Image 1 (tube, rainbow over the protein chains, first blue to last red):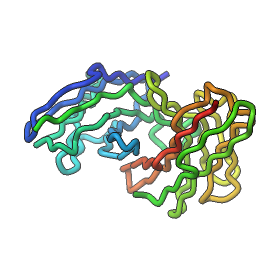
Image 2: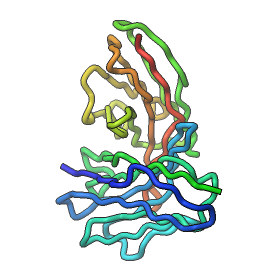
Image 3: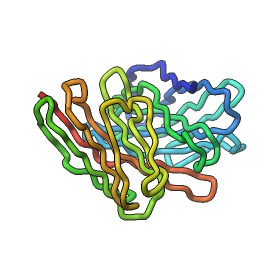
Length: 119
Length: 114
């Protein structure tokens, strides 16, 4: 069974600084996808970034980048130039079975990290 | 967003009553999911669907049933609601672009079972 671990329950970051959110995962599958989501106080879940296990380059989406270290089974999220609007809960998630059409395709989530950006 | 609408947004009900939550999508996505979110448990998969009339159980499916008679609608039913089913429920869809996958979530339904 797959497992996602986020070891930082909460953290402060100064506005305009970068912050790294840790995520480690455990799976015996060779093909999988890793996701990061943001959940602000409003409760919605916002997709941030995706990394496939066979992608050789680290994924980037604007101010978000994913530091993917396959051998260490880590997929840390880096937010550059933090903004006050980045204050939220952040979830790391994993989907095994590389082909989306495979039966049993589903996301497993970590427990989340709460980020508070200080002005 | 990916055109996902959840209804109702909030519901208060009594133990033992049936409850149906609706997820509606406008972009013809094949894969749809129902999750519940609880403090200390994160997001847990209840049921998912990979097409019309094709559904399967997730990790916390007991007490829940689903139906998908049309591509655009995925219904979650609590046949006889219990207080342990008080939670925030999220619907999600998968969107594939080449090898890249994105999952989008609806705005959530806050359900309180008294």
